[in-house]
Length: 275
Image (spheres, rainbow, N blue to C red):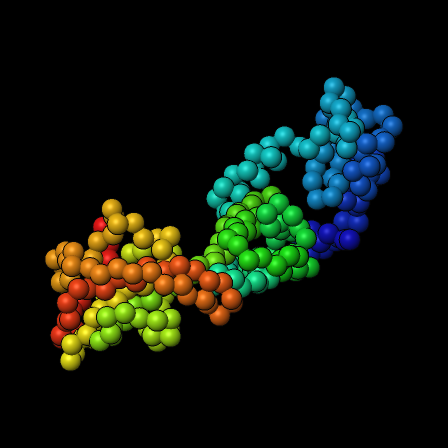
């Protein structure tokens, strides 16, 4: 390529001052180098400068080592401009008894711009990672809790990891009834949420006309030594307990503890279940 100097003429010289610098086209050429060169002789291969050092020996580049300072520069560049996630699939919850094939997706950026990683592993494997390195479909279905560690590496060597958790929970139920005991069909009419713990924050129970507030949780979560019920900030110990088996839509049968107040309530008490 001609290089224009000023406006009157152009220089037609080669890229290198020493034509030996043009001989190596790849790292294997460096490994097999047999041409006499002085110490410190430099060649440019695969986007990097390599320096000849007869005392250095590499199974990849022979007596050529990457120009001093490159690793330090790259380390600093990655520290200042790391690759980061701009989005990643959030944790997901499914009901106990279901079977799912986890799918994940993510986007990344570096130096303020969207970037595509050159390498991605999920739980240490590239199996299931898409060809564009921005999504994942699990090769296996799951029915139990599992964490997925997504590790992305940029072309600079900068890397970032994030964990996406897949959880399977039973449900817990809450509502009101004028009945002193319930069957499974009564409980199915109640509101529900995931039974990740026995606790529940302030919740309004509409007991107009005289009803019992009910709280129904998997028996595995109930501990009489720690369970506490609060009404309007005051603890209430007037509780009536029973157990019942409930089968969910996936055919899983679980023993539940049914908890209600011992006296009918009126109005709309605010109740919580916590330590």
